[in-house]
Length: 344
Image 1 (cartoon, one colour):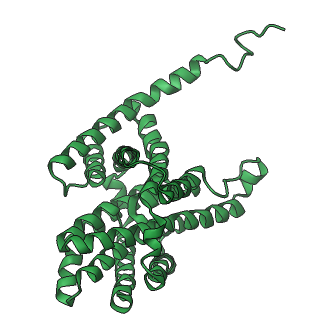
Image 2 (tube, one colour):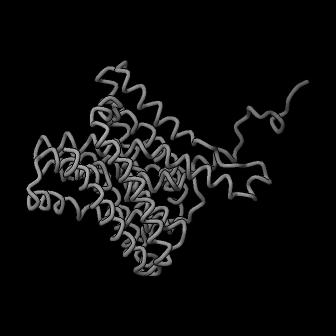
Image 3 (cartoon, rainbow, N blue to C red):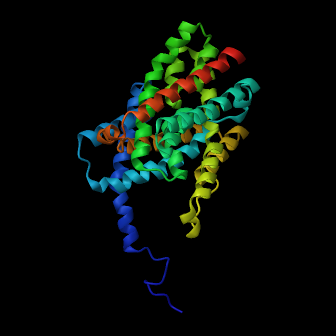
């Protein structure tokens, strides 16, 4: 029997084309800002493209009245591009390098993430910070900054304003730690290896760790990046636990037959990428290309997330999230200092 265009699902419908067209303006703007941030990073290596993009988005949304036509594309960048970038982040992980840290430092990394999340959630409840807000802050400060915040947004039902607040706090405190950790390491008389481990264990973003550890020296930089990536690896089990919790609490979604996935696809991709990198089957050129693509995707996503940082909204949420972020920074920093002093 012949199919008419109205019943043939293979036909591309005008509505779908319109939705795709609506995504293009915001997506194009995110891409252009990402390109500019990457070019700036080439000229000024210490200027992290992710941080530049977040700041650009925050400035743009608070200075210029962005047209509503950009919103669909920015939302696509903040979710879909972010998830793709997190999956590719696994290509930076060599599991044997993490194993080479030794049981003491691996236990320390687990303590940083588990202790940071647990104590941040506890203090946040005591301060009266909302459940979703304290979860976002806990994961962002304990694991890997804005990428962790946005990844949690992918598996939990959180509000856009809560995500924007957590991202803004990560940018603020992570940037402040770039000079603080090297100065503190000097005052404490830490070796380069100890200072690098402290930077990798205490600072939120990978790029921020690179900047801080690089100020100490080459030895600190190598250790700092490996310790930081060990924290990034724990993003997968943490997200899986949050997804299980979301499944158990989403009674309405269960009734409709739409339960959140136990292991989100981008988390599975992240783990698969780490395994592939560890096998050594990928040539150097493929790894370099993957790194560029991952950075570009995350940079575009960070601009879109930055566009959600409205100063008026931050003023409305009050000082409690700021206080919680301060406590979380201190908790993670103190736990992270214990490992280098005891294990190295």
